[in-house]
Image (cartoon, rainbow, N blue to C red; front, side, top):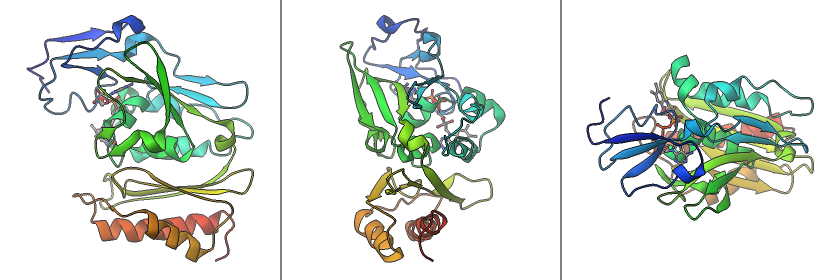
Length: 271
Ligand SMILES: Cc1cc2nc3c(=O)[nH]c(=O)nc-3n(C[C@H](O)[C@H](O)[C@H](O)COP(=O)(O)OP(=O)(O)OC[C@H]3O[C@@H](n4cnc5c(N)ncnc54)[C@H](O)[C@@H]3O)c2cc1C
């Protein structure tokens, strides 16, 4: 789409270029920014010129995903011994039902910062205890759990001039056993509910609900909960089931409860 209000798209070459005028915003892959009108936006700063390594393996088995890593690059990451959560990468990328062109341009950071409830990179990285590394305008950085970074529909904790630099996935989460369920109202529609559960090395059970809610909801149990404990936990915690053309709140609630229970059983809970 022609963005007639945009005067300039600057290619950032290093961090000193990440100084944003009042009407300038970061540009990731542009798959959303160039898809609709952007009122009030006069300029964009293209982050892809910064040349960040898309995926950096850490010596301790953790993984750092650059904000500019594309969905296609993430999906192509080879599996690694002991990284039991690896299959989730493909599951999450495929949950964004765009063409291969979209997957080649859309970035992990753009997906998280856009903060749609059906943002699969938010689902993935929140479920794996991902930590967002945020570059602040004063040259510093701060870290926020991805589960806390997205606060509402198209709202995040980022303030103007802040840039998501990377997402750090800890080795312990990547080595967990995972189960997942996702549903869309239409066959090739946007996610209406996406539930990911994880059992870590200490047998802690972590369930993350996205797409069904305006923001990620994460519940942690010291061990595998009973069916009742899980359902009560979710019902007591999630109050705002999301409502839009991709699904009604009562349907999203019912699907999320059912999926969480299915994941609990898949990870060893008594049926
Ligand atoms: C066919 C199709 C299907 C789609 N399906 C889905 C879907 O199911 N779920 C979904 O969530 N989206 C979907 N989208 C929307 C969009 O394509 C994706 O969310 C995509 O991942 C956005 O990434 P991007 O890099 O293109 O972001 P951009 O369009 O470049 O940017 C998106 C927003 O994030 C900001 N931003 C980008 N990078 C950063 C950064 N590092 N730091 C701070 N702010 C940043 C931008 O300023 C902008 O506000 C779909 C789009 C299409 C065309």
